[in-house]
Length: 317
Image (cartoon, rainbow, N blue to C red; front, side, top):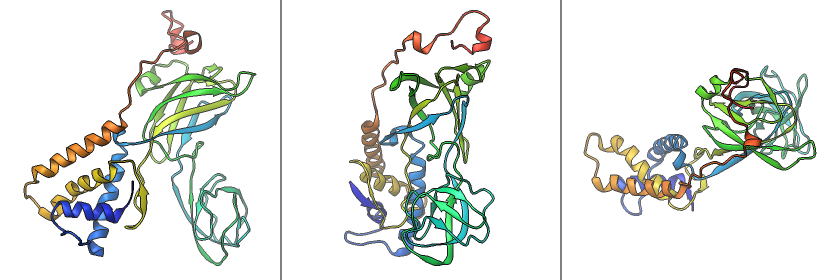
């Protein structure tokens, strides 16, 4: 269902009797509520069952590398000019020291998804041509990507390794996501192996880190499934398409967030809290998936030994 931030805000304010039927909030009220709504969306990403999509992230393995930084946070801004039909940002007055190839760039006349492919003394080459000409210096925003330039995930749900070499392409092997204690227990973390069998994810900020074991001795792909992350409403009229039930849930949840600001210490109506419970339960039931017990081919996944060799191989053949 498509809705705007203003739709959600108006519905929330009506639920706490701050608006009558047919009324809309004034600009100050709406913008204050927009900030609260974006905070609410940010916190929803932390709840696995509030996330409605599982995102498949695919990236190439590098032989001999088992540690990868992940994320694509904002890096800063610089000034430059662009010409329609050209992929060069010219007249860069102060080249940022942290600008690197692969960084995403955005700004007036720069197409969505453009990345940096080369950096000169006072020029930056993009992966796509500018869509308009801006001959006066203007602000351009760039990111500082990790080895894997995707939005930093909050959690990794599951995954697999797909080999693409040695005549066994398109064969998938299970990849277990483990915790810090299990990762710490692996004795020889850089031990080489044909493909990774386990992953530990350190969700640090601004860049997370993937740790794989064993260290792959050949190329391939890693496919990791993560939860979708909710993004802010940029403006009051920014449209967003959400699954069924989410617009109602956001209206009721925002009403609860706004209640103390408008009603102070007045008791919250039981009807409103009941609406919230019902709306949130409907969303979580939609996103709940049956958990199947994983079954592994021991010839592929390996198994722990009982002898002293465990110290070296960390519990994996």
